[in-house]
Image (cartoon, rainbow, N blue to C red; front, side, top):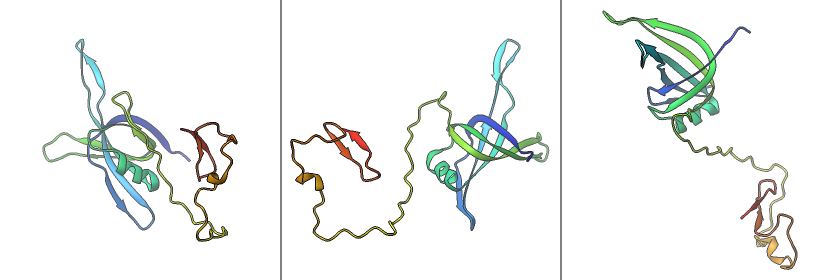
Length: 166
């Protein structure tokens, strides 16, 4: 396969546009990348390159929920094609179309807080139903003098028994 991978950083130039298709969810956002160049001994803005970024499925949903116009981004994906146009009497412009594999905030420009997405829980297929009136806290009957494996102040989570110190 002769795909061209591309990684770039820039700023979200539009709000994320999210829609559902028959196959999957899709999100698009335009990202502008303007390099700083040295000209006559001074740093100035170079030419801006615009990218049309498309994300599919879960990445599309997370892009919709995480990115706002003006956010600094880092994008890695597959270069699909370039599109050049010129408005009447205007300067020609080129947009690069990218199918994103990874999108994130550029932490050189600010801070971000990651929240792990929750996956929908599948109903247990062969799990017997719990009888009505069963005690909710089986640990309440345990001898208070016994030590639990997780140490003082730990509780067992229902998703696999992981212990977390309080």
